Image (cartoon, rainbow, N blue to C red; front, side, top):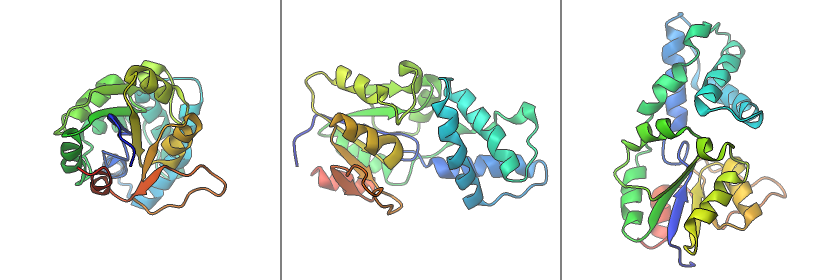
Length: 221
């Protein structure tokens, strides 16, 4: 294992259980209209829409969440009133970390600086950070670079800010994080929580683990 100085993380999906947060928000809001939504259908529909919203002209993540909700609702057979389309934004500050997140971050913080590279607005990330028991030294958000991963702007900015410090990235999303980091030659650990496979012919992560606890073990802390 090569020595590193900073471990940067994707946030939502890697540190924060975003799927549970999205499912709960959709189900709670739809229930107000007497509509029952299935968990797997919510995530499938959401994952199909959000990348296209993010790949258009830059807009703040609040708008991305709201527009994605507008697009997803009719695909689930739910007529979402326009004035309530920001329900995901309202729910995001309460999305919770995975059970392994804080224990692993505390272990890693003993030896490394920590960072977050996230497709998020600054104020929403500030609200999320109250759930973490470790601090972060390097923060790059979509709002700061006016771009969304898998674009390269987050990672290029992290390289600049890290200076001479050696950086390792860790993330759950192959599409958003593994692919762009490998384009730039940044070492990356794939936190492959779902046991997914590398895309045929796609880049291979530097390391692959199933949990953040395994990441801490890999790094010997």
